[in-house]
Length: 297
Image (cartoon, rainbow, N blue to C red):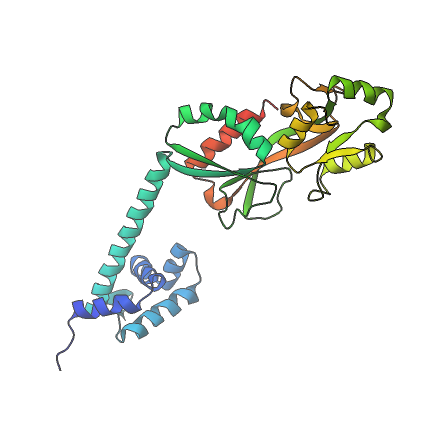
């Protein structure tokens, strides 16, 4: 039976050797010791030893021998080390290629926000972002449901509460101010007798947000003529004279008057993203744009 050449054995070995074992082997040769390899890869001394043992067992032959303080590679060891070096270089090339893609500020970024913020506040301000970064592809995911940033249902999300998840990073965007407003006729009626003025409000899907609680506390006995989770729908109903509404400042249209210059509700806004994306330039560009937009709130 012909013996396998070192090259053929190395090819067979690459099918059985996992990347962590190969990386540990290369680090061990570079450092000259198990402890040095462990420091380089930020693992334990025992982990490096176990990986080297598993690698030799999978190959069925030794990769090196020790002579005093020196490490001498076997012929198989030389071939496996060459394969490990090639894989390291391919990994570095891939990392550089991916970094280059990000540095060009190209590609899609998905932003999760409510329909009102996305449609009536952010969309009109998109030209400033896209004129500066024309290769960006911005997608709005508009819903009141909280998307999963860990599952990449969105890259960036606007939220009214700072998340407690340690894997998420939150950046403050400012304060969203809500005003009680209505047509001049409804505002005048509110000032005469608050109990009779009709309201528009939220449906049963959002019972615990501060806006719903404020209406429950201050207008619990008032007739509610229209309910919707959409602030755009509430705004249009208030403009049409259906009833009073508690709206963010950017939705207070010329047809509406506020009952007071002081907001009734204030909520902090946060831009939230997964820590894995913190170095991606296109995310940083959109985040800077969001911060600039929210200074107008």
